[in-house]
Image 1 (cartoon, helix red, strand yellow):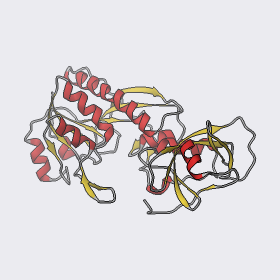
Image 2: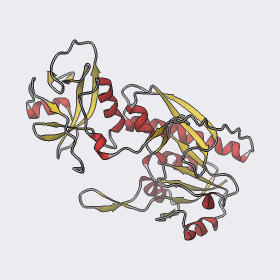
Image 3: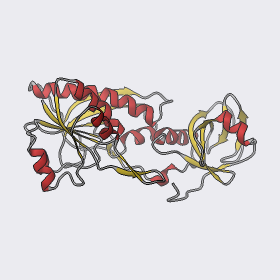
Image 4: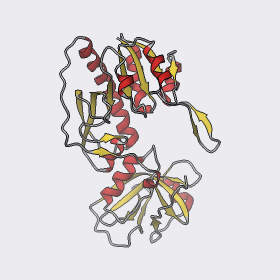
Length: 318
C-alpha cells in the first residue's frame, strides 16, 4: 500500500523503520515542526524526522496539519492510508476522509484503558503489571476508534519508562504490519471499544517532584514512570537531586522520619524512609551533573545516616 506516516516521538521510530523495510511504500513522513530545546534554545528535529531523512524519505512539517494547504498537499499524494504513531496532533475528519482506507493509529496501551497523552507513564505510575499495544481506526474522538489488533505485555518490575516504551514500540510495529496485511486483504475484524475507559492525562513538569509522604511502592512507581523522559527530583543539602533508579525495601522493620536516610550501603544503595517501607536509591543525577551510581554519589558527597532527602514542590525551575 501507499502510506503517509505521521509520527514525531521516539516511540514512532521503530514503526517507521519496519514499514520502510516492508513491501509497502511510504510516500511521505509528516512530523511536528523542529522545536527549541536545551539552554541554547537551538532548533532540534524530532526523532522521526531524523530517521526519515536518514532513510531518504520526504518530510513534511506543517504547523497545522488540518489547514487547507496541508490537506491539499496530502490529498495530492493519492495515499491509500494514513498511519499515525506518536504524532502529537489530532487529525480532523476532512483530512481523515481523503484516503482509500480508514486511517489507523498505534496506541501503547490496552484500550480502552489509558486513552490520552501519557499511557506508558501512567501505566507504570499506577503500578500495573500488564499492558500492551492496540491498533485502532482513527476518529475525531481521541483514541476511541474501533480496535483492529491488540497484544498484551507483562511488565517487569524493574522497567522504567524508557524500557517499557522500547518494548511496546517493538511489539507495536509488528502489530501495525499485521493490521495492514489484514486491511489490504479485506480480513479485518473490528471490535468496538467499551465506553468504560480510563484516561492518561498529560504529564506536567511539576509532577517530577518526589514526596516520601507516600508508600514506597508509590514513590518507586513514580520514578519508573517518569525516567528518563522527566527526571524525578527531590532536595538534598539545599540542591536539587534527580533520582533515576530505586528499589523498594519491604523486609526491614524501618523506623525514622519521612525522608530520613536510614542506611548507607555501598552495594545496596541509600535507604530512605517513606510513609510505609522505604526505598533504596540506586541512581542519581545531582544538580548540574550527569547521572551517576549511588556509589559515586556516596563517595562524592559523604552523605550520612540521619540526613534528609526532602520533597519541595518548586514550579518552573527546569
